[in-house]
Image (cartoon, rainbow, N blue to C red; front, side, top):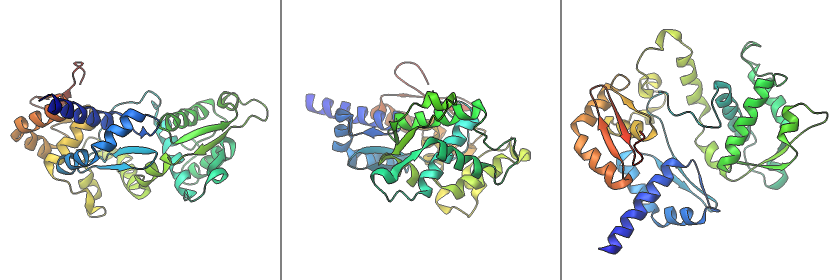
Length: 290
């Protein structure tokens, strides 16, 4: 009985760690070993409920999460402004553009050269007001926050220099960064074509108040996005903060039908509670925070 409780507690801890951490690095020894030990059980759970894949390698493990709808989610501590997220996207584009085939110095880049290339690319298809101009302090801080976010994930590491000096435009200030193996996992989930289609939809002001299911937006261009309603409900709940009936009526209706089953699975796997109301559903965690 004690062994079963230990096993259940380990599975719960591994589930929560995968969901709450963008990447689990090998230097986080205990968590890394825990998730590796229960990998097949964890992956089987996601195969049945979310369709997400657990990507694991020698240095990192990551739950590759996929959206089913373009609804607002949590704001990260490091990324708060729209241009912060834009910078993050450009960094992933930059990493992909280098094809990630090198080692050592080939994975290193100077912040000044990197910023120059992003600025040039961002101005190629838009007006000067929406493109990046890293002479503006706000844009410099956006790229700094995006890089810090990736550094926290383990995707890049600082090799030489002081980012603060570059931000303040000190004379001859520059910073040398290096992509790590973790960036490969992030880039593998980066789909520029999908991003372009969704961005075009979001920029169409006539559709901003419409439900935002990806499979409706993408139609037949990305057939993989045809996800079952209950799977969409699981994804929305786990990504948070809530599943709105308005955003996905079909998934919400399916959740209501299977509410007891989902609630039991959620409690058993994560130790969390399910709260279903007339127009929304959300997860209530042990701390009382949804």
